[in-house]
Length: 269
Image (cartoon, rainbow, N blue to C red; front, side, top):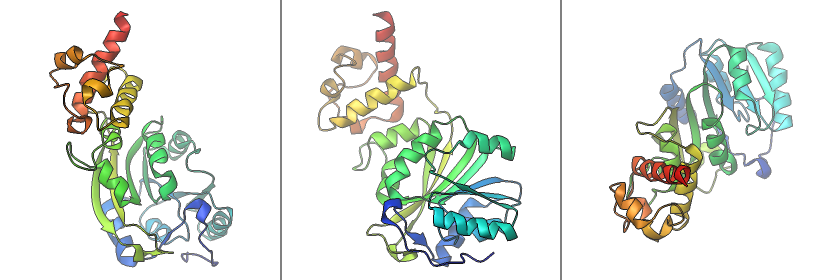
């Protein structure tokens, strides 16, 4: 199966930047290390630069493409390659649990994601009922830096803490604009995201997310002021956390302690 049969212009409304650099493709394949029986799903195959190398390594491949012209081209290729399943639709609205049931195994996801949907899609996947082994995504480097930041660093924030409560994120390597057509104006990075339960306890996930959002919406303020609608300074101290600290100084487990205390306070009201 050739990478593509037709010529397609990238569409701005889909945030398309087609990967073409062979060296980057090989590095992604090396990091992904797909096995023949993997229930592999490629999100946003575009012109198919990664699709054929993936098909060379697995028994069956599902691809999700929102662009109807690209999807039609892929379906035409699937006529000659029945191991390729083409799903036309918005990756944010796909039923991944149904795909996993049909494939009979937890999913492994891979793709060069449009920057405009990367964070919403990541959280939709982490919050879905679908069994997912791991995800290997090309994202804007700035987003990956925030996903993998350490407490106290410039990039540490709501995204870091929210991801840490749901998965392990590892930045694998950076990719320059020249690897894409058209080249984006920013650097990209490949990240590995492995869904897992955190090594700390969260009593109420919604409370955790609300408190973290409130804390980082006022990150220049101290905890005493940033989460005052959830906990008093005394209640923060009771969690063995200094209320004069700024939110970016706290690890995800400390936010969990605060959220658990806030949840307990609500239950006793």
